[in-house]
Image 1 (cartoon, rainbow, N blue to C red):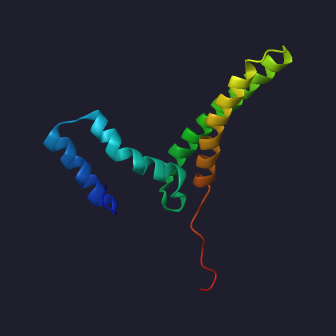
Image 2 (cartoon, rainbow, N blue to C red; image 1 turned 60 degrees about the vertical axis):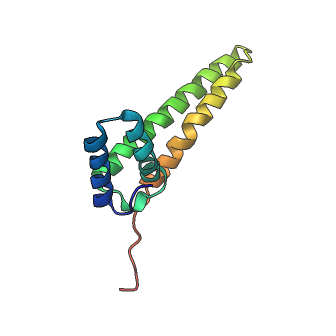
Length: 114
């Protein structure tokens, strides 16, 4: 489990790379939870550069989902049942894309009591 603050996380990940060599599988195991939290949950605390990157990433997921929906509509018009698989695939891409965009658009609320 990773420590809470970002500087300690960075030091922890650096020590893993230095002490054990660069093991991509171990790095993915350690960094994946922080990536998923940043992309899908903690939108209020994102810096601008990270917000822009996750926006592009989310838009790519949405684009893939829309592209699959377009293919399924074409297949349904041709009375082909295989379009169901495209609909399932589009849902798989659209859900994280929409959740990511929703998270990117979260900002810290300004306290109006000041």
